[in-house]
Each structure stands twice: as structure tokens, then as C-alpha cells.
Length: 93
Image 1 (cartoon, rainbow, N blue to C red):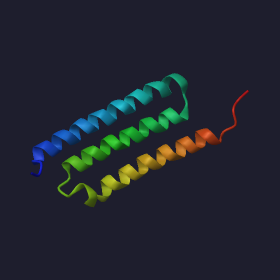
Image 2 (image 1 turned 45 degrees about the horizontal axis):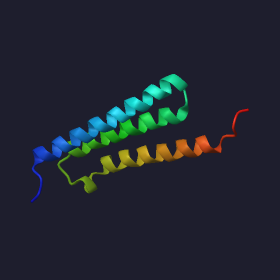
Image 3 (image 1 turned 180 degrees about the vertical axis):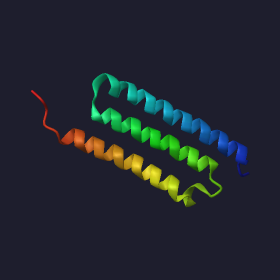
């Protein structure tokens, strides 16, 4: 049984809202600490929310949607680069 378009749109909206909430959560921590890692996570989760919106409203299958793929790629690359940048710094004494 394949899901109906309304079900796909509902699930994509719920996931988009979840990603947006996670992004706002990290944005709050960035606002308090001004740590670039939190800012990168907030932006990455915003990109993932946008990814779900694009995928939900797309007429193509999710795997065939290159815009959604590029948004996910940018989000994960941003997270990886932020973590590597955070771990490469020397601790401040």
C-alpha cells in the first residue's frame, strides 16, 4: 500500500516542524554562548527543514529530487565542518 499525497505532505510537514524546532533550540544556545558550533547546527537544521518542505511539495520521488539532495548535503557538510573546526582548536587556558 503506497501512501497518499496528503499523508506524504503531512509527514513532511511534521518532520519540517521538528527540524525547525531543533534549529531554534540550537539558535537559543548560540545566542547565549556565541559558539560557532551552535550556529552551524542551527543553520544545518534550518536547511534540513527546508529540505523536507522541498521534498514534500515535490512531484518527483524524494531520491530523484536534486534540490533536496543538495540541501541535505549542505546541512551535513556544515555539521561535519563545524565539528572538525571545533575539535581542531587548542583549548583556551
